[in-house]
Each structure stands twice: as structure tokens, then as C-alpha cells.
Image 1 (cartoon, rainbow, N blue to C red):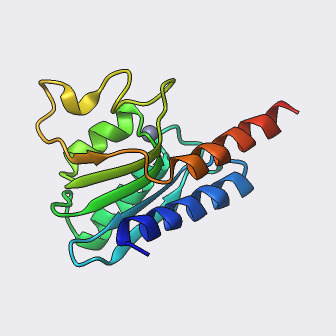
Image 2 (cartoon, rainbow, N blue to C red):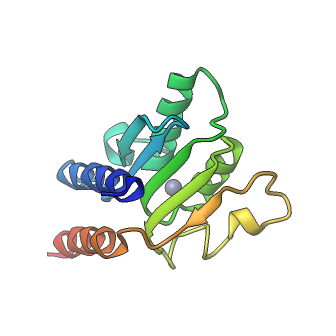
Length: 151
Ligand SMILES: [Zn+2]
């Protein structure tokens, strides 16, 4: 299996684990330049009572702690859903090299929709962006989660 699919599989398993905790099922993985997975996290906003505890933020914090740096040059971030504006800004601040995401998020996304953070003139670093990676499975997880909550 190619690297980007196996890393997205890991992000999807973090998303499934988040759903089991009652969190919106989004998972994120950070991969170091040498190919090691240095962080794998899922949403924990409810558990931590923290509106910023999105999978991407938690993964960036863990990866930065592992790197001993506030920046992650050469690192890749995989996330199952298009990042929101907050996470997109954090990805920019962290100088992440490449962003791979799954499902598009027309309602709350901030990369291809809404604020389009990386296209903004005030954005000083934009990662390379690859969308639609495993988007069918990522979208299915989210729809199943929200359908379950409406019952
Ligand atoms: Zn976010």
C-alpha cells in the first residue's frame, strides 16, 4: 500500500476511535520527514471541554512536543476532513509541508471553502494541499455519526 493511503488509514482509525468516545469522528496523523508517524490524534473537544481540541491541533501539539520545536518543516499532516479555519491557521503557523485531507467540508472547512486560509494574503506559509484522499470512507464515518445522533 502506498504511504499516503496507509497514513490516511491510520487517521481514519483515529476518527473511528473518536466516534466511539462520542466525539465528531475526525482523525489526524503527522508524519516526520523520515517517514515516522510522530502523532496520531482524534477529536477530543467534549472530553477535554476544549473547543480547540480538534484532531489537527492535538496532532500538531504532539508532533511539536516530539520535535522540540514550534515548527514542523518537512512534515506531512493527514486529516480525514477538510481542516476548519482555526486548524488551517495552525497548520500554516507550524510550517507543515504537505496537507492531505479526506472529505471536503463545505459547511465548516477553511481550505477549499469559507475563509480559504491558505489563499489569504496574510497567510505566510501555505502547505501543498492534496484533497479527496479516502474521502468516501471519511465522509461515510461523519454521516453515520451525525445520523446516529439524530435518532
Ligand atoms: Zn479544526
